[in-house]
Image (cartoon, rainbow, N blue to C red; front, side, top):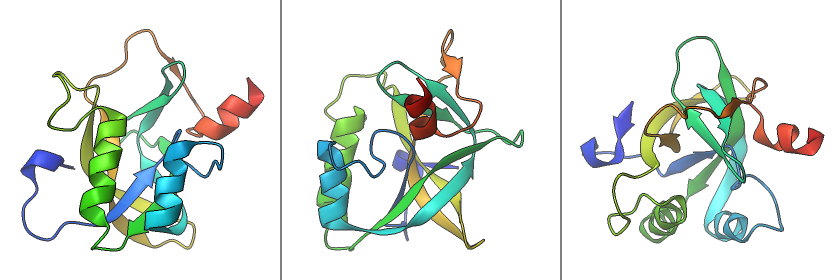
Length: 146
């Protein structure tokens, strides 16, 4: 995985979202994605998902667990503005106090058609002690059952 501060050269303009940024017309940040990015498809990435109260957090993992989410692709001209707004929303912009809860990392997202694409994802900086793991890897489904 590549962290946002380590990446140089060609960078993806795709983002993998797995929580409050997924398709939800009632959520204000979804409208940023709907306006500035194209929905690529539903996808999964290797990892484990935790319920942090009002939102989830993902940790990278190679243990066979998957996190369910969606991939969006920004027009390259929209990318700088869009990712800046998303970094601010996730609390990991340069202006946010350290330590950040999340960092933005490049992950390999597997689309429903079997294709794997590189995309940015917001990943927790540390394992969330005391938080409930969402075994299904699907935040929206877990909220619907709650």
